Length: 340
Image (cartoon, rainbow, N blue to C red; front, top):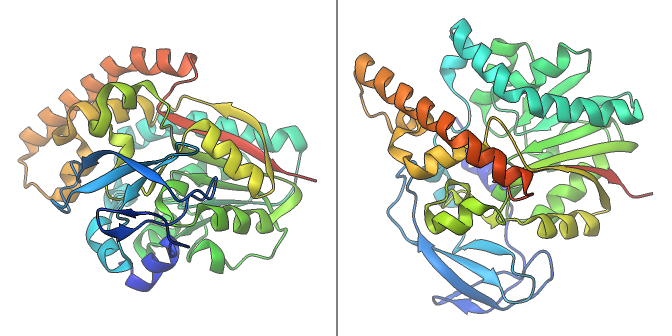
């Protein structure tokens, strides 16, 4: 179970004070340091229903970075992050078919990281921040890489060890038990949008990297077609857990200011893009959301809903491919290198 202290450390604390929106102080923009914002729309937790509170999505008037306001305080995080968020305890005893599916949709993540490592042939640890159940790291280990996971959930770290044989520790990046300059790669899949201070998080990752090491970051793409079409119903906003909504230009500038240069981008994820669109269209069918909400479905009802959801994901594939081909996919995966 996640402790309040760990959650507070993961998020950090907002720095500075911006203009007052809805009677509260908004921190300065971490990309351009501007203090003026405009409200785009209001939204609430339509996926897990952890709250019916309304949050604003606001946009920086200067660089147009969007964010959640007001950001949940440390005391709220437990309610908004269920104990099995982004990993399932069933993974430890998962059936063979389920593992085959997850391995299939993770192949492009693994291939992206392997290509980055092979291009520089760097020895060292591959550290996955927010490792969840550890299947991604297990797939890398099977290809001969030394791997380790980091997660702020005790249960996720334990599952990575027991279920997938991956060494994992429960800690935040600022307190990671790894020596500076020891990592060939640091990966962050859907992590950066959750932290209050992404600038510091990237700086901490840079300190762990070898001079020739690489950083792999994946975040939802706030410049995608799905957001333009669906607005606040886009699942990539994930109110109130996502504090930031990055466009490619936002991510580029943030990486540049933390000592990185972007080498490569990818706008499609087989695991995330079509499923994200399906969840946007029918959040009540999302399997993880249904499991977390503990709806008490019968086996027959569960199977029927899973099949309908899978068909919807398949139907979303052509659109997900098209928007990605136009560099407007619903996720951005970036390879970045330390500046010399």
